[in-house]
Every structure is written in C-alpha cells, then in structure tokens.
Image 1 (cartoon, rainbow, N blue to C red):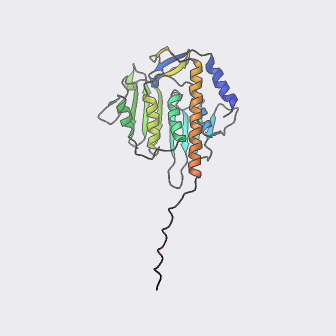
Image 2: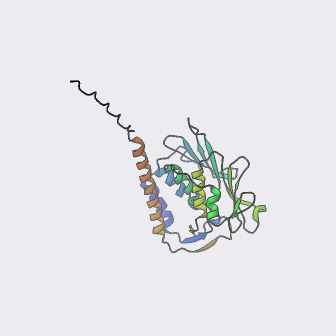
Image 3: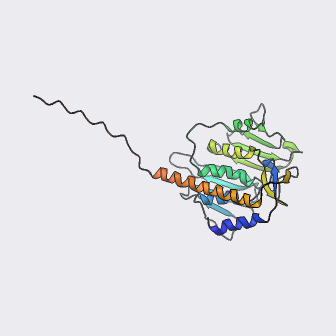
Length: 266
C-alpha cells in the first residue's frame, strides 16, 4: 500500500465531523478501506481492473481472494474465498452491503494473523458473554432483537440484521454467512468485533443501516481516527513480518545422544 493511498484516507477524514454511532450492527458500512488497507498491509494485491468498480484482492500465495462487488445484483457485496489445500478444505464467507467495514475488518485481520494454537470458545459463547439472548433453538439475538445469530442445518453460521421496529419479519438490512468449513476463530473474530460496545465513528450524512442508530458527537478528533487507522496498519505489518520470520526459521531436531564408548580392555 502506497503513501498516497494513506494520504487520501487522511484527506477524506480530515474534514469530516465524527459521530459516535451505535449499536454497531446498525452503524452502516463506513469506509471500506478499513478492510482493503488492512489486507494491503498484509501483502495482498489488487488483481482486478483498476478502472472497474469491482475490487478483487488476492493474498500473496493466491490461496485467498476477497471480492467487493458494489454493482452486484445479489444481497452479498463482499465475498471471501479460501482455496483448498492438501490438508484443509476450501471455504467461503459472504457479507451484505451494509456490514460495518470495521466489523468485517475484525474478520480479515484475524485471517492474516497467525491462527491461535489453543482451543477457542464457540460463536454462541461469544455473543452470550455480550448479553445476547439465547433461545431454545440454539440461536441468539442482540438486546434490541435486530441482530440474530443462528446455526443452520448445514452447520453454516448466519448473521442477519433486520429493522428493530419490524423484527425478523421485516426487511433484512444486511447479513453475513460463513459456510461450515470456515475456521471457527475467524467466525469468532467477526462476532467479537460485532458485539463490541464501543461505538463506530461515522461522518455527518454517512449512511447508517437504520434510522434508529444512535449518533452523538464524538470526542475523537479526525486526526485521532486517522492515527488509529495508521497504527492498526503498522501493527498488521509487524505481525505479518514476525510470522514470516518464524516460518523461515529452519527446524532444529534434538541432537542424537552420543553412543557410550565401550570400556577399554586391559
């Protein structure tokens, strides 16, 4: 990612008056560069036509691909594809147009970081700890009942957001779908970012997912928002470099024990 791209992000946010916006599932899409800049910092490259509204980013080893298709006729604008390997099956995750970019970035940041080596809790545990209501079917709903997490019969996970005043029978605002092969720690990372009570910053006039989203003037200055974005990108670069150094270290085997010498004969 080049300096001019960061400068353009800074110029974009320099004149905006930030508003704290919550809950996160109603905050609206925000700036997609929270996602694309993070992946670029991890070494991903744009492989689509620069003049096309569609953005395709591919990982350095081409095992992952993220599509952003704003002109798509489907409900999903973001699609992440993971290719199969000799040891792991491929998987797909899709995200609707109004998914907050910062929440999706929680997912992509976890994707480019080393996978945890310890066991992780399940998605329902994540939202349960945040105060969501679990029902008898094993699904969970946010306190305002607008956001719902459910495991489908095919073992995929689905997040759906509906208008708070209409409930599940109202129009769907956005969704996120993770097929049954999506690594659990990535699903958790998305949900951790989603249930975070900290508000998201939106500029005056930015689109929210619903009119009931609460907005108040943010104590953050525009420069602080840009600084936090830059610090996050530097952190991603540092983690990726550390992971590469670790993977390039030659594996060392314990030295073979020295055979005991037979006693000298007299």
